[in-house]
Length: 88
Image 1 (cartoon, helix red, strand yellow):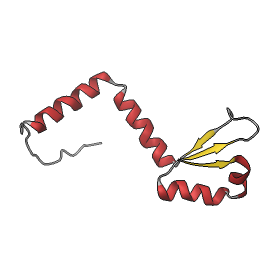
Image 2 (cartoon, rainbow, N blue to C red):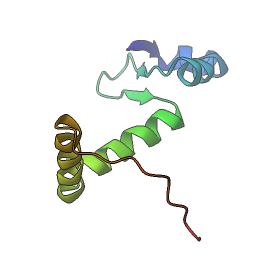
Image 3 (tube, rainbow, N blue to C red):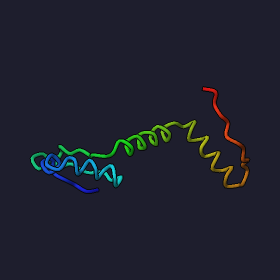
Image 4 (tube, rainbow, N blue to C red):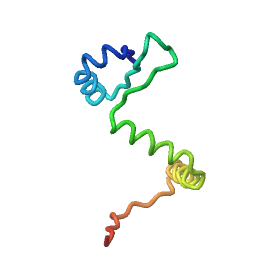
């Protein structure tokens, strides 16, 4: 993870915003006056992905379904079918 000072971020905000969006990287924003005053900048796309992953991992019932599905795939107990279209 690249680190950048708060003042450098302010001077080059457009560049750093483009960088985290284009490269899917995170950026550590530091404050030389207070080491505890730091933040992380990431793209909205990466943030959404991370929060969705956390939601799935924190749901025991969903994780159980995923594990059972992985086990079925591992022992070739799967069936292929056409996509079911929703009437929504």
